Amino acid sequence: MSTSSFTLRYFNAAGLSETIRLLLTASKVEWTEEHPEWPQEKPNQPFGRLPVLIQKSADSETDLVLSESVTIERYLARTYGFLPADPRKAALQEQIRDRFTDVILAFFIQRSASDEKKEELVTKFEELLSKQVEVSSQVLRDNGSNGHFFGDKLTYVDIAAYAFFKYLIVSSKDLSETVSGLVKSSLTPELHKLIAVVEADPLLEAQVAKSDTLASELSA
Image 1 (cartoon, rainbow, N blue to C red):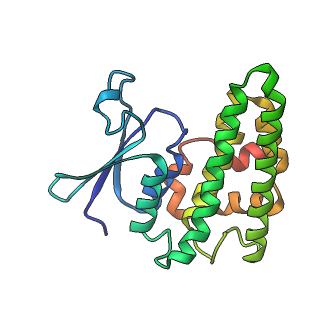
Image 2 (cartoon, rainbow, N blue to C red):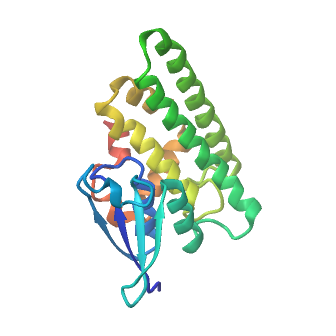
């Protein structure tokens, strides 16, 4: 068992940190969360941004401070075995994870677009989403449609995919009912299975139970 403990600094929202929370939970490490006063605490963060992860050793000394959400995710995934040691196998997971970022960025860009650019950017978002659903579903099928992208155990990309779809369907609903409905309707049987398997994994039970499940939203 790990002798390290962690503190996650982020806002009291899913945002960029839900995958991190799920990884910390699945790793069975001791961790807590802080919600800094913002923007007052901005100058005190390594890059003036959140999330920030602080790792402390067994004697409570700080021995690592990380910023940038995907950097934090991959550090945890590698450290606690949710990414394979083989760089080729790891890269297959990481490329899917990076596409989730592309889709999220497109979502926010189209939201803030001017009227003359809106239609073009909405179309781009929809194309990126459609391709991501298509590719993800094919990888899941190639793995036997067992609810995992690779193998038969929980991996980094399983967790990241779950957090991605939960964000767009549940957390973003207040921002865009249209996008939430679009993503919800785009899910394939393979992705429904992934969501169910991830939510049922005993390693994630503590974090999943903190909010409404994505499966319950999909069945509503």
